[in-house]
Figure 1 (cartoon, helix red, strand yellow):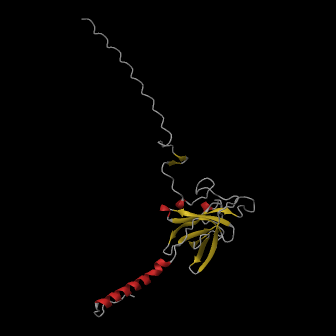
Figure 2 (figure 1 turned 90 degrees about the horizontal axis):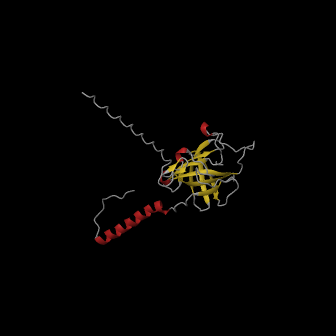
Figure 3 (figure 1 turned 30 degrees about the vertical axis):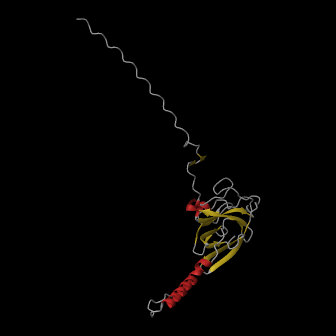
Length: 232
């Protein structure tokens, strides 16, 4: 799937020449600062993208604290079944606990962070070889996503993914970690909404089943009347 400051010493100048020099220096400073702000901001990479080889659709969305990171999930596979007709699993994963998880719905883009070039960078997981790669992701065009993966600094390869808006048979369309949705790795799982319980949101004004009422204590038995004193 993947793949020089100006010195302070100067002769005294008359007011007019001083103003002209100041204006010139201000213009020079503006020109020197221009490259930092000249680059057009990247398009939002969120959406569903068809990989360059056409084998998968990857849903990319914001994640993490305050949704400042970028995560991606395989929501459709061209070949979802193995040679035995069973759903494909991530059997090459270096984590033994993940080798039986379904390939469909697994997370491969792992919380990328925005860098100074307005590109997202971090790690991507390739289930085809069970390896992690350094990756940089950005979108210069609304319908294209550039994905640059590197095994090492000088061994990189770029792909162009195309945005898709239709739904293919077998494609996951539900929310992440929800019904018919992809599954996030534990560290990137969406946080439960306040008031939610393991079985869903709690009813308004309650926090679950009400505790059973304690039985009322039994009334104390009446005391027997005192025996009369014997006659003298």
